[in-house]
Image (cartoon, rainbow, N blue to C red; front, side):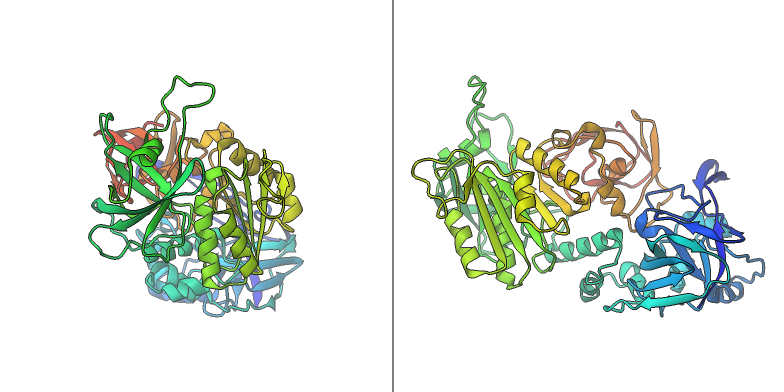
Length: 580
């Protein structure tokens, strides 16, 4: 294997179909040694940092062995190095022989393969062939991306040495087929997730595909009637409700951590009340369990009404009561089959989705390391504590730690709680040996904000911090930081020609099918619109739809008025203008 050419270019603007397009695809060969940094080669740049670039797509590689095929296929002989937008034109590195996770040394640089190439319309512009991105995709001759494990220099003529073959052994060609052509191959998707080096974008896509297959719920779904089978007081303020389907048919599956959307007819309310409550037990049950805290009026504002839906449940919902709901949903969930160490962090009634996660993990029988860290005021408000301790006693991989902020004289250390105080980042750093775990958070706003910021400061990647938070995101993160780098990391495909304009911000962006919603696209372009549920329930994200058409990828519990759009669960059908 040999490096034939090093090719770079900085982004430039070109005219395409009457509009200006900025692109860095016009790579040109350079002579001599070229420095390689974590994000790219010296003298190189990417225009679209959503579909290209970043540490997992730092360097694009294409084999010269494919050139002859394309010359014959297209009847051309005008190709030069860098023809396909590659940084490194190589010899002897075919897509069927190179695996995701393989490590190569070229010159003084150590590279690792992370994913196949993602072709887009800009490649068609470069080739001068309409739709060429579909043609190269179908051919399987895509090339692949490197991330840089060790910086250094490379130059034409360098020998390429494969220093390590990934133990899973999934060739680029196979991973590409799974992504674009064999989407129903769930076993293949699971196998791809075993490849530790797989880029976050592709990993997220495969995880989402498995999650959707697990649920298999249609978009146009009718409300279903549930009957309350049991009502169990868990504490002075928290009660569990066990729901059974009135029609006797099987329950819709859910993933541990998801919530149940409810449409409640409450006396005195001028329209139905839409609420979501986390499911607090394992998915492997013949009931749905909701564990709900009675919410009084705020202590400093006794003139305000107490929580409408929570008090309705506590005061009026009894065994035999009927409730309307849709299938569980929500993007806060955990894969119980995974093996990555996990930390479940909660406070107050925020433990409900994490109990579901805990129960699901132990039922799988895995040895996955798990820390369950919870904070409550005292034993009168702490719920399911005995259950959690029983789980820890029966499963050596489960470690628990409970803190009470105001323990009473009736509470005993070692039985009810482990120490006094609040759950904070110092406690987490003391109990958890590494940042290399997945963190799941749920609780009141101060708790969430403190832990979220503390984990980031500790060096935990935001892509590993998962949270359930029912309130505008700006309450959790600084407004300028609401747009998450996590959204960019999830991109697995390149942009399409559909354009989304955010009128109030003067930002325009091409739609990227890797994103599930217009909200995702807005965040990836640095905007910070409010949102909460990200599931079409709460209407926090509602915006004016000034032009164009959208479609809902997840049916809202209640559609917005005409001329408005819920950006958290919609994507554009045409060019659209949104009032953000």
